[in-house]
Image (cartoon, rainbow over all chains, first blue to last red; front, side, top):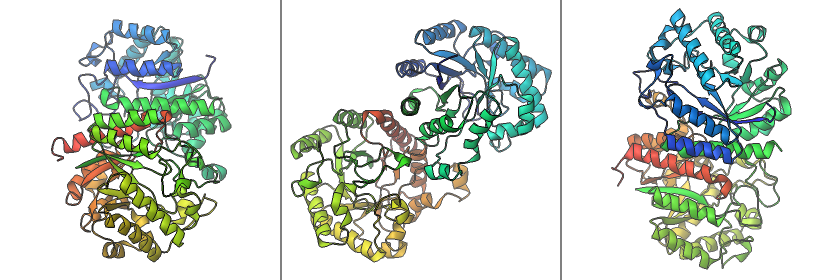
Length: 308
Length: 318
């Protein structure tokens, strides 16, 4: 990978947060293909070179057809789409979120964390998707927001001890590595704490793992000048100092200048930057068309301003 | 019910001529030329009509050449003929245009050097001239938005010169402007929020002294969860909508996607339940200039507001 990654995350699957049976769970799929095409075409026009596809229940898997919902794309349909994306200069990467708080797409398996059956399903999904993508360079495993606070509205919340979470994370990463693929995870302060804290994290998580910290809030010039930016911002610097490659992730979710501020911050203060990503966190449907377009454009303008 | 969007024709609100840019919002600098792009203006206003908006609040500033004060124009300010033609076009597509000039000491960069003359007779005359001429230009609109928010020192501290008024002076100057409007048969309309109320001298004196023809727009742009509201822990700024409901003024709650896409929905749900006696409509204010770069920011704001309207009011918004 040579050019900096100019990436966006788009939702193909949407069943990340609300588990089956709760409001917000989608069956049929909540991805409108026409909107998907418009957004990805716009990405190509704006010279994005990477698309992180939040897969979830978006594609029918041969190893686990039970994970599909009505409207999940067939593998033939999806392979065609991968080719179309590549023909436009966009490299697609897969993401499945294996956080206990963000894996509603796993349906009942989401409640089986800790069982051999759960581990087998995770392995099957990763291995099949790596083949589907033709051995991509990266596979994003998610793994953030697993704490009690983030799951307090769920009917059943599943939290792992740091030791268990680290063990499971390393297992997933090894599945990727065995197929020649670099694992990629969310790496914010809380997630690192969930994995046992900074020391354990650096000791156990290999330097081949690509990191994405994410901070969506504003940081003012005054805060920067006084060294008072919040610890989540400072985490970009830490990840670089620890020797990891990173793709800082921004959004319009919290603050419209977030991309510009974060890109500038990281360019000035963080090492190991291999690119940046925009995550709008809006499902790919007609209602969210303008929200997604705003995110793509907002990030693009920030990139133009800060990556000269 | 009013379904409105605020759109910038003028952009010289925040940074006075000669000020450095605010890095917080680096685009909000003073410009000697009109920043609004007409093509973008047309696209956005056409989309507003398609989304079923019925009102456009035009943040005028330096956007139109004024006969009474041609010195307030910049290069590219629309001529009155051009603007009148646009007013007709807006009306023909179902949008009622309403003027806004912000007379807050912190937001009146469009007044150029007059912005430094607050408290003088010449300042009062200029303000009167602008309001009266604009009322004529719009053909006696129902409302005239006068701004008047964010005048406290905190909002102006990055300006080379910050001007604040004592509460009694602010009330006096506001009542003067209201009077200019009301004498021409137009209802004055202003921003109100906890800081602005304090700048007026506090809630009690505001209620006691301000005319009940006045329309007020509180504005709060963040997301608040239903749980937080159910527990009665909503922020003071959101609760203000409910408080205003008992004051005797009509209000037009103003939301934005400035901080969160769901703000319009939060605002409408809250006000429908707790402020329906006084709400005569809602407005969204994207606070992005009318240029191509911000096309999707403006469209997103419009869409979020419109979808919120459909969700909260469905068909029962008349």
